[in-house]
Image (cartoon, rainbow, N blue to C red):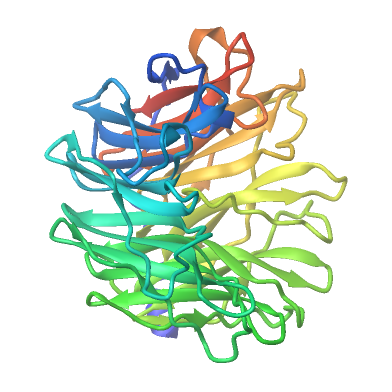
Length: 474
């Protein structure tokens, strides 16, 4: 172990990459839409430079509908409405929620989400793009023990590593007495065909209702993935879990060993995960100590998950920093043992701040406080670092939100060059917009090995409606 760490630490950062972020552009929405529903445009996948898919929700009257945006050859096309499967309730196009997008190749992507069927059950669905054309959505077939009435399933995340080869995770309600259990499911696409979902096997000692949450999945290659989340045991203790897929076979969930200072009732959960090679993944999340909610990271090396480590926050962190990871695309690992992540914490005077943290040579370094533009107040409650992506080891970019001197929420881009995080730069919004609002900002960033990046998010227009934006860096 020591020799591997020494070798990794001696590896220099990649060549310097310092992308320049351009002004954001308005994202075209479907006709008749008043804007992005509650600012929700969080998902982005880009299989190559200039070719991306973004997903979220738009306002269809007073409800939300699924939204898909395609960038082809550097040009964002007209939007696609993510209509639900054929068993949806009449007129229910306004009750679709998207929870993830993934692309295995240019023109071959998938989006996952939920909808209401004709019996008012909440069902999970997948909508696939094949050869640049979006096909009709199909319902995910839940495990055999799923409730047939009063179902409320949610598919939370999807990852794709080749065309027609994806994996998704979520939760569903299983038959049990006296009330239904919330269980986790995994579901795979193999050669363009989606299989039936399978229940996740949990560690021994679960309670009657384990209340499983599977937050995110990442894959190093097709058939080799890891999902992260939590479950509740028979003693009412919440455990962080990882679920590995090895050579297309999903293994039972593993309860993560927590740092030594964890409370008995640690309330642990993993929010985000990234994988660089087979058997080498990293995840971040939170747990409780006697003093409050702390951040943690857990590493997988050679297929084995190690004990989690507490993340060392900036020196101005409060005793109870209330660490938060937003759960979108806030961790990136360009090579084994070398990652970047970010989130939010509370400082010693009660202000919300953002932080950035790096893993170097399999060791997590002390976190860096997000450097805001002069005159800024704080990252604020819905601010901090939300999105992180890396073009190479030690060269990454992040998206964040903060409150400026006028009290308005703004979007911020931050570049890391040769393992040094630069001060954040305020993003120029479309149409001279004054801010992004409490629910807006940069949600996702994808950076390519050539140093270019793409991002998506939302902002407030002059009528106080949220509108979507796209942004690029080169």
